[in-house]
Image 1 (cartoon, one colour):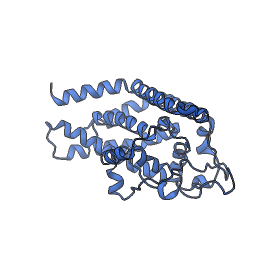
Image 2 (cartoon, rainbow, N blue to C red):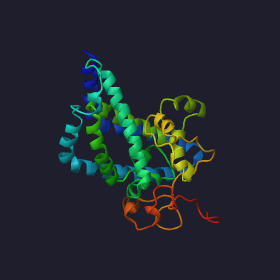
Image 3 (cartoon, rainbow, N blue to C red):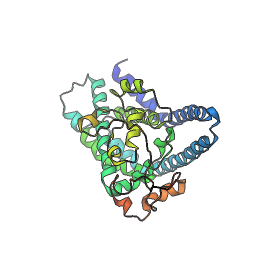
Image 4 (tube, one colour):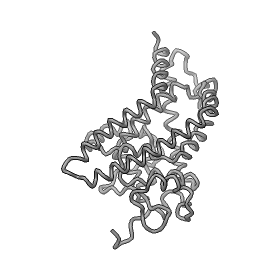
Amino acid sequence: MSAEIRMIAAAQWLNDYMLPSTLALAVVAAALEYRRSARGGQSGKRAVWLQTWRVNLGLLACALAVSWLLAPLASPVFGAALSGQSGVLKWLPIPASAYVLQVVLGVLLLDVAMYWIHRAMHAVPLLWRLHQVHHSDEHMNASTHFRQHPVQIVVIAMLQLPLLWLLGIPAVSWVFYTVLGIAVQMWQHSALVSRPRLEQVLSRLVVTPLMHRTHHDRREQFHHANYGAVCPLWDHLFSTYRAPPQHFQPGLLLPTGPHRLASPSLLQCLSMPFMSSSASDTAAGGTHLQTRPQGKP
């Protein structure tokens, strides 16, 4: 059996079982995090952890519902875009026999595309209104990866679509990258932070929890950095890499007033992009990324 046939078969299996595989990873991550939070009788932290998981899984359910409703329209469009019949990869002098190389290049092109889409989510005020939901989590864990507004899911898909056409991404690359991204980004957001020495080694190959948590820091000098999804190369290449701070301050100032809402509910997360506030119109890291006023708990 050729490498091409094996990769296509693997991609088909991953695509068919993507949702149950994602849920299985979530269950494993939740069990490990719960066990860790239960050590030392930290009941308060465990209650916050449970509330965060409930809200984030609620957002995941909303995103899945929207995806299911739009699937009849989106599936044929994305199928055509992922046909690999045209685009950059088709123009490159890559022999047809080098199928593995095509798939790997497709994954890398998808990752650099997501880097720029992520930067746009922070730089464009309208997109930031959606993306701020993800950054509103002050108690990060593996479920924070699912903390995305359903409308953001649709917008990212719309931004991806022309890039898929232009780059000529094979469907196999898209499946592998999607599964890899889910696994890596759940790890990045998890409360199971690796040891610094291990992360120092891994950070040369993949965006690690410490590197990504820097991006979730509310302070502007850290918040506008480390946009990479899987590969850390792009942040180094485009000068957006920042080393992790000594003291991590996750979250942001919500556009509801001068005080941060530490644990927004599911309804508050869903309504957050549509709340009227001049602060929320400031592209990520403007006046709304502030610490609590002095003297406030």
